[in-house]
Image 1 (tube, rainbow, N blue to C red):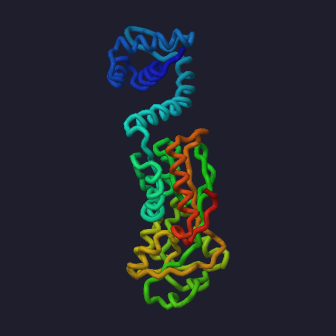
Image 2 (image 1 turned 135 degrees about the vertical axis):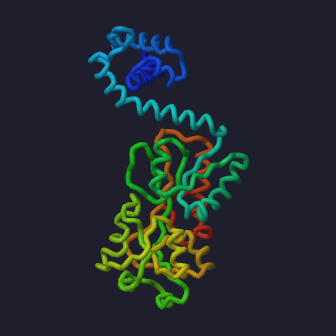
Length: 308
């Protein structure tokens, strides 16, 4: 039976060129490398190296086998990295990935409910952008994530969570702040704090909010975080399209928000690595999350997409 250590030795030897260098990289002895390669050749049933004048020369079969190894080794390496991550963390803890604006608004309310169910469970919060959220889930670095909705991605299971209206953020005293709502046409001549054009989950934001109305505002500052857009508005650099999570906080900093009339909505999800099973702790976190998003007193500006 082929063992992972044999494949690791083969890869090191192919990249290093000598058993001495391969042994040094793997922190084992040179005879140990030779034994691993010999055992691998026995298991495979063909020779990987020709021994000539004290040197190992890869055979044609070794070159072909290396291609197959490289195609499959990344999956094994990811499993090993995941095991190391799990081993290094506290047992029975919960690792959560969350966007910055959600980690300072929605997540504290969820944790209040969660700790009623699991008061002694340690929690690690990884505050990252939405694009990084998906990487954390795929690499099994977190158990669960709360983020903006994203397209289907292999290795990730997504559950719709919440839908919220789009807001327009304005500096206090701005003429448009007197209106009950803002339309795309109202911003045609305004300076808008926009989105990073090449940021994966910010693409097409301008089209989504303004394209249907044929309006194309001018942008002086672009960013991919909602908190930054709010901060730029608070300092008088322009207006912006924002989500409602942080509106209460930024209203104390001189920002006025009004409903923005657009067909688009902010949609949020709770996401997990695809595994087919969830721990009891993770199920309790999901329950706590649904309790919060289904409570109009806690989330008055949102509509739950999944019932408790």
